[in-house]
View 1 (cartoon, rainbow, N blue to C red):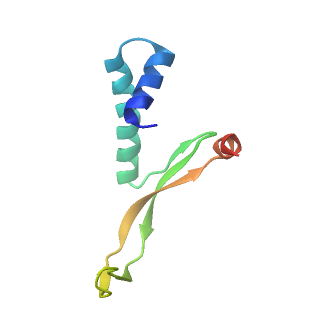
View 2 (tube, rainbow, N blue to C red; view 1 turned 45 degrees about the horizontal axis):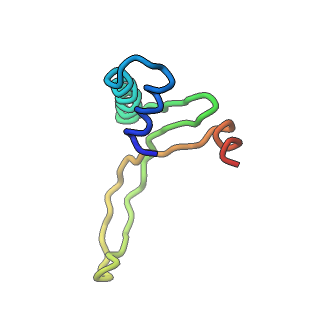
Length: 90
């Protein structure tokens, strides 16, 4: 499933226009992105939690040349699945 499929599913379920379904999906994604950029967690009960986690600086290897490369510390998005999602996938 991709973004267009998700928009189609929202449109089918809620009706209205495809434009309003697209705006709803975009609003959800934008809100989650902005919250993570500020360092906040987004917890959706029964689905899971989105969070921004700090990854420490490290030394990695370039797979093509084998040379050591310094990778700086950075914030990366993480997702922890909730109980409801885990049980549905089981």
